[in-house]
Length: 510
Image 1 (spheres, rainbow, N blue to C red):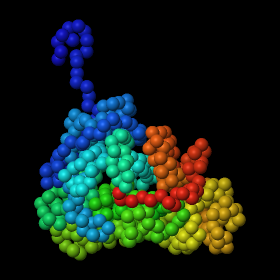
Image 2: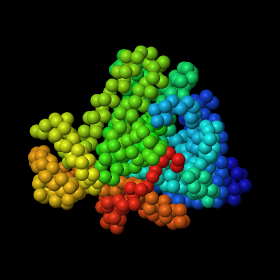
Image 3: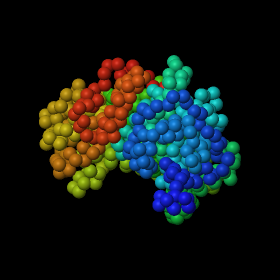
């Protein structure tokens, strides 16, 4: 105690409370898994945007988040008390080919907070795993990742979060000279399939087991006591990851989201959307759409994503096989993906049509999907119908008391083949007739977003930011955080993309 202060009747001096309380997490695994290093500072950092929702998740003081201390720490220019930054090592398959050792080449983990969330800085500088890279991220790609992380969360899709986006005038060379930016992203864990592949490929079974035990104990404790799969905790773990991944892919497909680069090192062990690079939300519905300009073979086309996810899970199963011990159990653990994905996807698509999965007196969900959803998707593909606008207009029509034939005129206007639409609409009306109209409308209103982060909206915000105006980034963030609301003041953002949107190229070079 400060006796002089006490004698004067003052409160004793205390050390200021650290803005973030840290706890042992991934770093407790030891040096086989990472390298400790500090982020590389950037000159003249400045705020671009912050997410109040993610700040609340972390229990951060809003005043601190607006401070210069936060700006410096979340840009990588200063290390907060108690933080011991690190970059982790992993390996993986890239575009279906074994790439060997990879790792956090431009992401540095600050640590795990007392609330159980890791904070990682993407674009924080070179690490031992950068290979030929510079360890930086550019403003363009960082805006896209920041916005989409929060947009996906608002859509109800499992994802990493974004706390802040900061920028710097530091020049970064890509196809052209751009400026630097740093995204502070947040997740319970950033562990990927590739972390397990790394140790399995080197026949390092002890650290492989240590990693699996850590993930099971922290994130999948139920796998220790589950009786399925002969009570094998590692097989149960693989099955749980398979099921989470299946549900994630169902969400992607239902909302029309293309990830663009589903390498095994970009697959979260927690079933989160991670690593927002060359992603895209569909404009005109094209099942074979390729959003990644670097994907010359179309491996990660929209309609291939569910199968690619299973292929990636198979790679994870191979990595875990030394722990599971039996190939039959490993295969059995993967089988659940084939049941969970179609069930989850079917339920989501029926919800988009206002049809609860198991409504009394209705045909089984599987039959309704085959009868309604498959023909609808074919109709949309044949007519290049805008995916988001179709379901948004359908929602409005049902909410207004429509749902049969010519009452769906605003929706019908989207389809060139009117006769084909009328046939589908008549079938839809029969299915809708067996439901409560108000309940159907409510289900659709919470399932069909009006606003998604289309490429041209991201490009609009990027162009403004490059000119020094960050208001569009923040305005777009506010809209994307409530994507089901009308936002009349920004109604044009829910409209058709401009002609120039088709010329936007997104690649792995960001």
